[in-house]
Length: 279
Image (cartoon, rainbow, N blue to C red; front, side, top):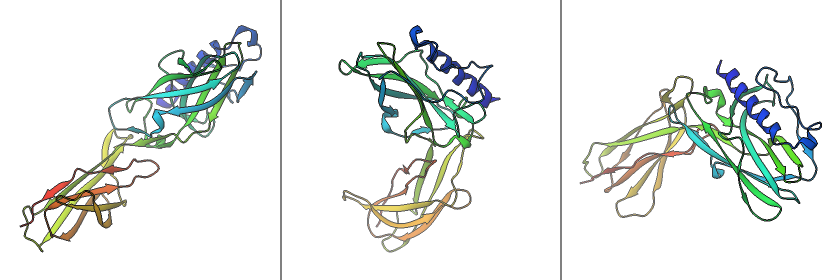
């Protein structure tokens, strides 16, 4: 149900994109489908005239990290050029294997009909739109974690335009992660054994809860009181529930923390450090 709703929202945005194409080019414009007549194969890349999209930046170049409840607003900046100047530009994010109804399984569509365009020079502008990643709506399952694609369109003031179904991108939507650290006993005598526990969890978009991230390599790091940087003591793996546990010898007052480097579907995360008083 939510997949079809996502496609319907995407279709509506495509229909809006057709409105940006001037009447002079209406006969040649891509035929944007509506929610009930989505074509078996959506329009391919189209260029009319000399309009070019030169750059697209999503979320300031950072991964889109989504938890289990809070919405995430994401800005997409489309930079385009045309000898006559740029009239408009906009973009959306989509997930799937192909840009058609049977293969799109997720989308984030603009919240406005047109982009907010800022002139760079006489021929170039950067147009920005906002899309929303909502774990209660369009981020509906773990299958959506990973790489997403960009659909974009830009229009020149002379009526020329360019549409790209999958503009080159490294955009990733990732499942938010949490990491904890607890060293005990506290205080501890010098030379005695410290047990350092913790847990690595991440957002499960299927259940809308956080769950253990299992069998993942995590570094245990230590910083002596007064020092400026951490040192990695060892690397361990989370267990079948995402829990972490290891032991070290207490040497001096200092801070312990766990550090996870991240994966293609989950961002890096560092726990809050736990200070240990060594006597």
